[in-house]
Length: 224
Image (tube, rainbow, N blue to C red; front, side, top):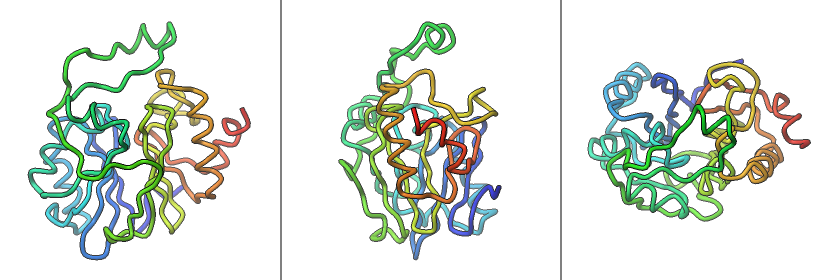
């Protein structure tokens, strides 16, 4: 399966990915990876023929630190506006992680920090249900897909690609078929959001960890 299309550039930032959406004039960045990733972002953009300063908007899929760690650095370098769901704004302002419901297994492997994990960022654009990306040069929209966190967002492009952040993850974290993360605000909301994305008939689903996946790979999850 293709790792990206002409208008979509995955940026590999260690165990997590960000995504550059090529626009008309300005471009849109989805997430920023962990702290200290600015140089990696710049290098990969330059290989794709893109200047960092041409990023006009950063979409935050959710406020976990592996997705927002370099957000302040990106904003300072570009002057880009930041779009996030209204329910994530307090976590972006404080640097605190959104809460997650945890099983015994997740509590053993994953212990969220109670200390701020990133510099506070004040979003410029608050998303409720949808955000049209056409005014920012990209043919597509941002949609609300709660589940992993209450304010998680996905991006649906007119060309068919969907960027779903951590709505689904590889079953074995770095590889394997798609699954719902064992730490999530709501498993029920995650399943509903997966069905919502599939109803929009994406051609490919890009995830922040692992992937990409064909929509058919998520059919089993959608039926739950």
